[in-house]
Structures are given as C-alpha cells and as structure tokens.
Length: 362
View 1 (cartoon, rainbow, N blue to C red):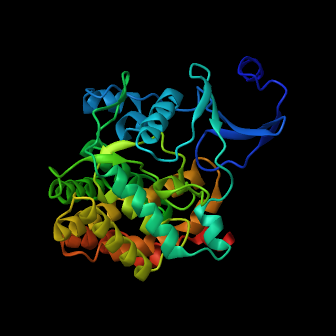
View 2 (tube, rainbow, N blue to C red; view 1 turned 135 degrees about the vertical axis):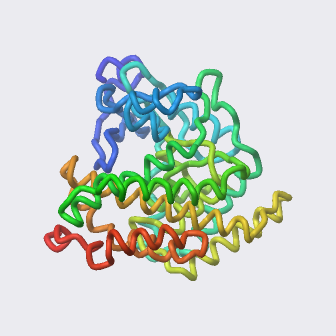
C-alpha cells in the first residue's frame, strides 16, 4: 500500500481509516496539502473468484458463491469500469485517480460524508431526496443494459441462477437459527421450486443496469451540483443487468431505515412519471407485479445475508435489522402472484419464529 501511495503521489498523505461495514473492502481518507481523496483497499485473498459470463451453472457452483450470485469479489477493475460507465452518463460516481488492480488498491474522488441516511437523520426532506434518487434511476433506465462496461468487463446478467442462490441463503442460514434445526431437503427443494416459478413469470422483460445496493447508505447528497449529479453513487461494484424494479425496491424497502408506505408509493409514482416524461414509459401493472417479486426476492436474500453476517462473520448488529426486513417481506408476499410462497413461509417459518432470541441481547 505504501509503495502504491508513493507512486501515485500520495506517499506523504495523512491516512485516516473509515469504519467498515459488511464487505471485506476497507476505506481510508487521504489528506495532503489541503487535498482530500479516498483509498479503497480490497484484500485479494478475501473473496472467492468470479466466473466468465458464459460459465455454466455447474462451473459457477464449483467456483463458489460469488460466481453463482454474480458478485464482483475482489475485482477492483470492475469497480473502476462501473464508475467510468456511470460517469459517462453524467452521474456522480467517484473519479478513479490511480489504481493497482493486481494488489487491490484504488484512489478515488472523495464525495464527502453527506450520506442520504445521515442527511435524513438530521431532518432532511425525505421526499426531495428520494425523488432525486429516482431521477438517477430514470436516467440509467433510459437505456437498455450494456453488454459490457469496458473492453474486458462484461456486465453480468442477474439471472435466475443468481437470484435463486440468494433466496436460498434464507433456508441455509436463517431457518436453522430460527427453528434450531436444519432445513429438510423437502423444504429446501420446495422453496427453490416456488421461487423459480415466481421468477419465471417475470422473465423476458427489459434489462437495465442495476446498481444492486441502491439505498440511503450508498447515496450521497451533493446539493452544490446540478440535476442527477446531486446524487453521489458508491458501492456499485456488484452491478448487473437486471430488472428495472430492483433498484427502486432497494431504495424504498431499505433494510437499514424505515421507509413508510406513503413515501414508498410517492417515490414509485415519481419514477413512473419520470419514465413517461423522458419517453420510456412502462406498463404500470406489469411493473408493479415485477416490483413485488423483486422486493420479496431481495428481502428473502437479506434475511439470509444478515443472519450469515451474524453467525459466520461475528457481526451481531445485523440481526437488529431483521424485524424491519421481515416486515417488508411479509408485506411483499401479500401480492397475489406470491401466494404460494407466502404459504410456504407461513407454514415453515411461523411469524413467532421470525423474531430470533439473539435479537433480545442486542
């Protein structure tokens, strides 16, 4: 790291580490002669590898979860490629000043500290910020997903293999903790079959660039800028080609903060209006069906991921988010298209079992 900083002209900078979150990446703020920038450090041995876009499901399974779920893993070059793609569309992704992809170091533009979550906690205008965030999505969704982000970085498809692998985290991690037993083979198979059926009903729709973690902790408010550039974008390295509903749901069913149904509906209505205004209207009934499925899929995944962060990675604070996520998931499952899945959850994981005993100690 020191050699990289020296070569990049930041060898004498003051390095201030920043708090970490769920990922293996580490960040630090660099300060030198009145200038600030960010250092991203991605340990190269901390993630399982990705897979080529044409890899079979069996080949992806052999490489591990990152390959199956289409995650970037330790690929810093993918982060840089996504940033360049977003900046090329006039969006406020950080500029990459220097990089050593082989060793996992990147120096980035410092977009500041005004996370949407913090601005909102300080009394910021929820509707105004969420509408600004929707403006970014409409800008991205004006175009179909590109086949590639750069000459050597394809944009992976958020395919059924990835989506099912994510929902299966719930049966793998949450169910044993909640029920104090492993999921049976019958329960696991039925869960996967029901999810495949629900996802199959929305296949074939338009694919767009999907940020994948588009929520208040990954958006920065930059009011000194204009238009869509007022919304700073970070943590986008796992971007994929997927449903236009996905990032909107990520925003309006935020695992880390309450988003009331009225705000969520106003935000959705603003998205639909923005898409009409720019000449790319969507079929509202079909879109709301897709939203329900993507919302339930995302929240089922988060239940599994947050439980895994607690059990495998020793990060108990993520359990405190689960009541909110289950509340979203239960609401999502009321959509008629998800009736069979709702029946599975009510039968296998009764509501009384969704509040884990471990939460009481947090």
